[in-house]
Image 1 (tube, rainbow, N blue to C red):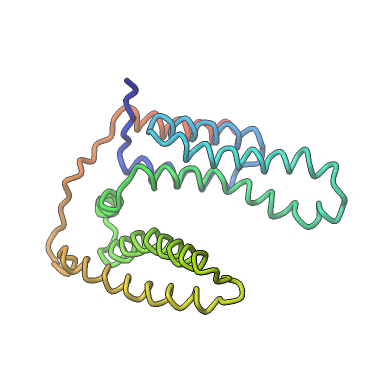
Image 2: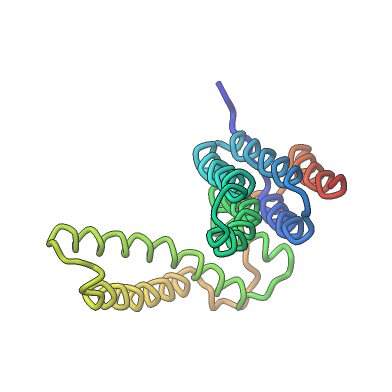
Length: 218
């Protein structure tokens, strides 16, 4: 039976930082293809093949548009869309690495990494609340949109009916997250502990070294 690879939370964060550096330094399509394929492999062995494949196929689509559609398109289309398409394509490695972090590392894991790196507790608290805020907000937006569809209400014509519940939900959500943080002892000045075992393995080292190798080669 296939066994999922479990990376150290620090590996996922370091990988995200390296990929962002690569984004600003990359100059060739070959380097982007190699890095995207490698990240897809990492997501696959970590048990998130479907999420990685969606990002990878979108990247390939943008690549085809850039190099096979634009050369045969009218000039006004090329001048209008070539810049956003080209820059959006370069962001996909960062999205892929971010997907790996989001899918494999919990909020507690990220907070533990920040504490390992000696970040301030104020920053860690703000990050944890923000990290938990957006998934819940997305769910509320989906619920409001579905409710409007059931009642036959157009979101474009009745934007206030869509916005007001979202704002009220966001206010309530922020209060609930703040109470949850206080309940967990965030105001306690003592040293915070975690049950997560931070330990680099040979797989973590190989994952990081291979990304560094790609950056050096290209």
